[in-house]
Length: 455
Image (cartoon, rainbow, N blue to C red; front, side, top):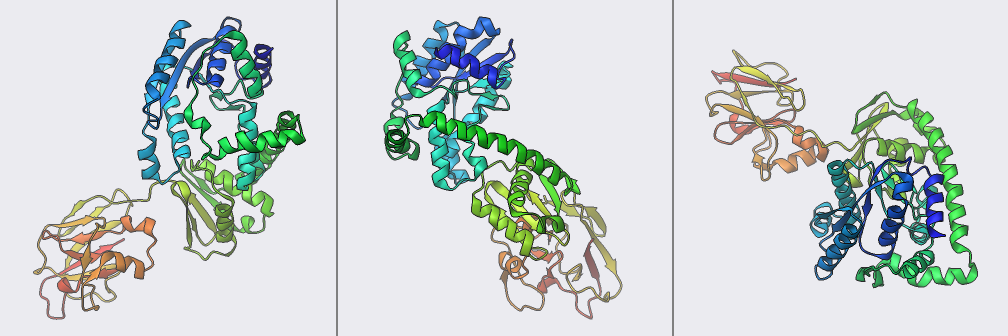
């Protein structure tokens, strides 16, 4: 019965065409053990080559060795190649400021992708079941997700397939008992400090008292939402294609005027899709999309918004740029005197040339006049460094470079692209585009004037 149900699910969602190599996520729990066993029994019928992977999250060192040994044993008993990948969830969560569960998910999928590439497997099969689907639905409902979030766990996403997604946990437990299969219980699934576990142990059983067919009811709702999402996706992509004057892998530019008049229902989806197309794949909360809408509708040119996952949105006069690319940051380059260089990171041209007399309009912003006798050569062009300070011309005292950027309203993602000109003594001579240093400023009687400019 269960094998037939899984076979039907595979056919319904076109998970496998036959002849594929499939990597099975094997934690040792009842779901993954059942998945491995079912695919093993279907391997000849579907022409499958199987291998398995255990991902060590580094969170349960007392239990992990036994789980690794168990997963290896049941794989070897079936003649299946087995892989173990270790990830450091705590370190990643701390460095990226993520919750442990989200950090674990990101690293786990990276591990899957790594082994897929190593083995040449075309699919990764995971053991999510119908009850996982229901729990995810209610988790997202309680969190305030929109319709797209409520579509819950997809049966197929890229190379990922979930053959048990229409199979209830009770059926899996019956199969395990009937077939006498061994499995391991993950202690973290018993803790009540995880939202999913509280839903599993408390809310869902209570809801089943009101509706014994809860699983099929929610599955039907999810199918309806999925159908509607496919329709909206088509509508959104058509709308989006008319809005894009320029796009790269990590950056997309959209015309503002059509966005401003767009129905809010479509606008939310267009902006989410735009973020997705820039590979800013981290899920954004409703409030983040509303902040982005506010930037579109009421933001002034030059205004910007910093979103999770390294995504930035910048309002221009007629367009809005959404990017997940790293901000430009210049390296360190020697500036010939006289001579010029083009900074490869930004394309800006910095020039140093000797002039006979002060140049009108050279006020320290686009160009600066310095006393060539006071600077120690050679000159270098570099990005800002922590602790940088200088003496702004006309200011009269020392100032932190950080404070200068703040006062000048230089966005933080553009500060590493501001060229800093320093002499061989490590002293800042000029902050290109902003201010020269008082200590090196040319005076009326300066005999040897060096003009620095940016273009």
